[in-house]
Length: 261
Image (cartoon, rainbow, N blue to C red; front, side, top):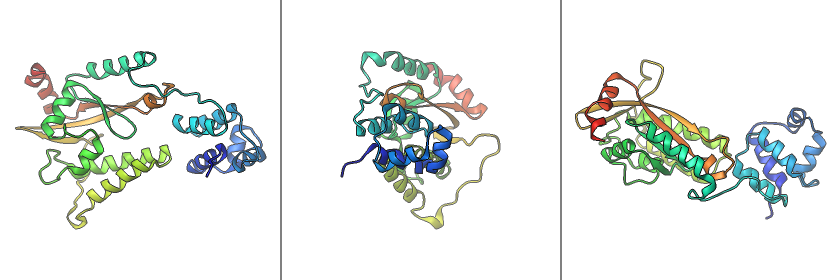
């Protein structure tokens, strides 16, 4: 069945919980025109698709899809990472994660595949026994809470589940992310009676706690996204910078560990 641009825009309007009337009023266009676009009676112009798409925060990939459905050329590129045009962006990402040393930094794509890591994150993943996984969600789902070196596994997994649900909502519910959500939820509640979620910690951040040899380390993360990049794939990247959540972790990374890397 052929999908029209109006179908895509209508789906995203509903996803963002806008009525036709409210969307029309906020964009200063007639509700009749919105109705005609969504029913296929009117083919939206390139400018109208971009106007609606930007207002509703529709992902660039979906805006391109709507443009193609209306016989317009896509406006956002989808280049391979080694394309020369992306060099300023890839260099900035490399600089960001290297400048974050000695602390771990990870670059993820929209599917949570691990795209890049700095040396510290590479070592951390290896010591946690997670370096064999290409996907961070897959690594968490397959982790055994009883033997995991993630000390607060259930709390960490619950925070990841919440973050995943927020991404699904913003992205319109991609099937592969919904599958991860279902599997992570099943992993968390596999033995529901035995699951005892820890109370939130004192302080202003929820941290992830790792056991590395004789060291108990605690981190919180700041996540950066490349929202202004006009390329579909690069705009979907997330750069996760991990920071020490306590003095013990800070001292660990400023001491022998820093010298060894």
